[in-house]
Length: 383
Image (cartoon, rainbow, N blue to C red; front, side, top):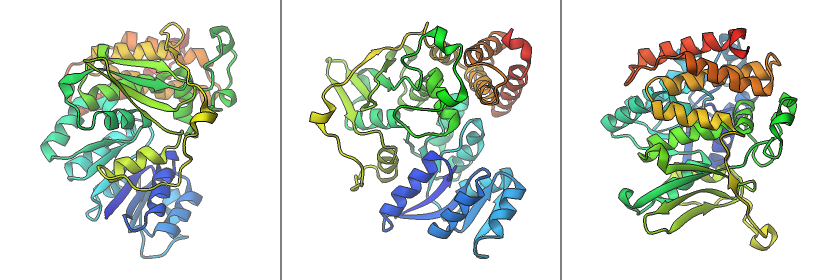
């Protein structure tokens, strides 16, 4: 039996993880949960799964939860609370599903505590991949990918030799605006951007999907997970989201992992590897499906994807700056402070102003993150 701690339990990945746990109660026990400020959902989760510890982002949210759950459940808040969830002594597996760079420190804490990691927080590897990989090696901890694309690569590589891999191909839906021109994007609204055609995700990830920054972050994540240079990681647009990613080998053979768009599948595989359990997911109907389509991920059409490759190749603190500037840009777009295309300007201008540090410490990463956010909030970067 897996004893789970979930960071980001009220978000899309967190709720799907709990759905998997509910489908296999003999396989999983939920020990600890951490979330933001969604009190109603956390109360439902506590009443359903009876964890020993929960943590909320704010004191007010924690007090609201505490007043509505059994007194035997310990309720904490803030950084101390999420770190306690990540390192809970009864948990042997931590699902890292917090949104953004705030997932880095609790994920590192879980690794240092010897927990197996199911990683859905790609920013952990984007901002500090060299630190996270070394920490996992020291602790003897395995990081299991949860993102559907990285799970697909992980599955395709089972039993294969690393030296036999020619390239990996990450598929991208193209997001809400995959059929829009650049001229149309100038008028794009948050409401339109949040209507993802295939997946149900949180607001930040959905906006990143529309700009293709999400795929760019996944490219950097894939570099760290699978130890491949950036010129052997490619992206193709695949509107149906049926092929979740592919591996091409040196002999020209290509392996692909296919399935309906259902995040419970990669989540469950990460939790149960190397076993597979039954799952009440929709099965592919090949006749109904008919055909699959692909097109090139054009850097001129998707500047955020280009910038992610550039940041990854530069390395050091540049991916941290890319990620921080993007988080601010998405926040400002959702608040209607900047336009859809101005998000690209914010990220590019912040990157242009940054002098990257190679092999940065955690403190240097934190400083680069703070600096990038400060600059990204400056209206002059959009001019």
